[in-house]
Image (spheres, rainbow, N blue to C red):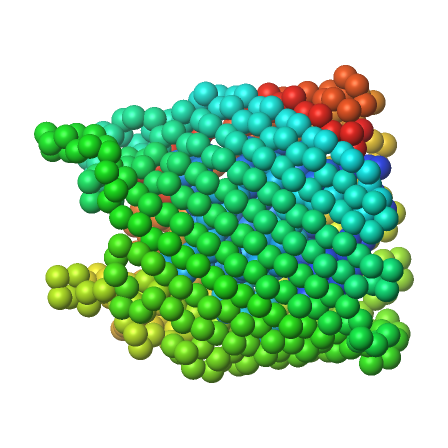
Length: 636
């Protein structure tokens, strides 16, 4: 309760804008493309949107993408240990597979488990992130129940000239990382190429002790969980005088993650994320823009085991593999019907494939979706309508839709309201997992999980300050559960109701940047008490209260800052028997430009060495330090 009152008081005193002081004008009215699949300002998106720029990333000095996003409105993560260990994302209290994640417009994530491995995306390769909260299935299809997160990799700028970059980082637990890149462009072309890597010796992720280990990772292994990453990214594009544009993007991140395990599940995983895409846009007529996209994402995972288990030594050998591939393409048409009247129609196609040592009952499925959206402005009023039909060879047709309205008052004040439906498609694990010793492990008759969401919001941007407040309710039907009494075979039975209130506000005054976020949510299982034993319980691993405050100040070449994050208690299981205590952490940071191009950065995370868990029996990092030397011509 104290945490909520403190956060609310700080929010009422205003919190910050999203970018550095010199970028204030652009930060107040950023352009986003994720909310509507077209370029609109955040004000015109008629939804709750957060934009993170490269300047924000360098100012906040996050150790990972998870570190960067935790505590933003409606967002919480869980992680089974430190950097590189398995994580799960929860947006607005929905399930961890209810958020669509894109990298440069390409959908990513495992088709077996349905999760995007955000812990494997190197933060040094990120240029910008757009977060759109609320249902977006009427534009993107399956999985966008909680929202959409789009990550844009670093890129050059037309006319930007040649710009090299370099960073070297050292830190606690034997951390060492580096990144080097080269970007540039002329009046028509742009390009970027960067390579990076990271290593940490880690710490024991699973809380040790025989009884505790058996309850957590099911093995007593006190060794450190080391993590290694090698990554590279490239993109290039060309824009002709008539506006025709051609662009390519590529990202690869390979990871070696050690964890406490056994010969059955391994104790070392080699994972790889690959994303490649191409985009072409042109205008056959002045009022008609065509955009063609093609891409592929791959999620590759192989597990190994080395060590002694129950007195028997096992050499380092493969214990299993699972490789996902998603091919995708889209054709989008933006047609200007009149000034401030835009019609968008398009078709998406994707093919999901899996190659695994598990031997799934099916290895491929296709989905085709057609959508239409209308955006119109009438004086101070704005409206948006969208509808989509998806046809999947497994679960047939599924229709979704959305409607939104907004009104602009004087002095930057606006109100908006929206309603939308969305769905989550059953994964390959849900539908096609093979029988275990003749006992079924999957359910081919599963239906998609379906949601209905309503939201109202008010926001204002005026000069150096801004604020916003939104309230929402989401109902999810046909939740997929695993029944222990039926050998954990998935089935549709439950319902969830999630109510939430999100606040954010900002001020940038006299060189001070203060930014605050507050999330109050009630994610509950409201299924039939006869069929669902957990009816009335909170959904697991989702705290009801979260708050984050960022404070920064620049003194010429010296920058100082701090981030405070707090989360209330949650439960690790659907039965609400394993309680995860609430906690708060404080991170301190400093940066110094000793030349216009060179700077040194220092960060102390979890400054008070608070012990906490986001997954039952799995440790989180204690007090940790990071020191970075960075070269960037555009940094000052």
